Amino acid sequence: MADYRTTDTVVEKKRGAGTTIAIVLVAIAVIVGLLFATGFWSADVKEEGALPEVSVKGGELPSVDLDSKEVVVGTTNAEIDVPKVKTEKETVKVPTVGVKDNGEE
Image 1 (cartoon, one colour):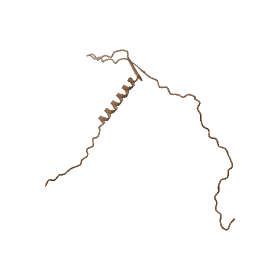
Image 2: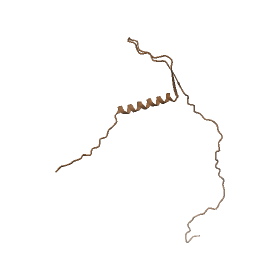
Image 3: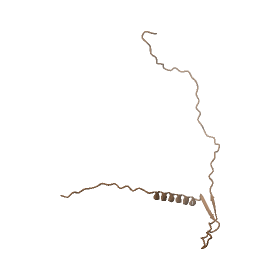
């Protein structure tokens, strides 16, 4: 007679630190790309960069004039309807509850 055995094993794949870092870097690149694409950031390159020559002198970084939009936050005065709650004292009859002992009046 044949003996069929099954083993139900669950394998969990865990992400390493490299995957998390890669996801964060891609998210940063997407955000920076969106800022340039929407015009929130703009960059004007004034001088071209240069690769390093074969010598002891290093290369040169390009000169960049970076302009960003300004976010202005403040307050203004406006007239709006605000409800006011007023209280007044008034005498009204309210029910009372008490206990009366049989022998006392």
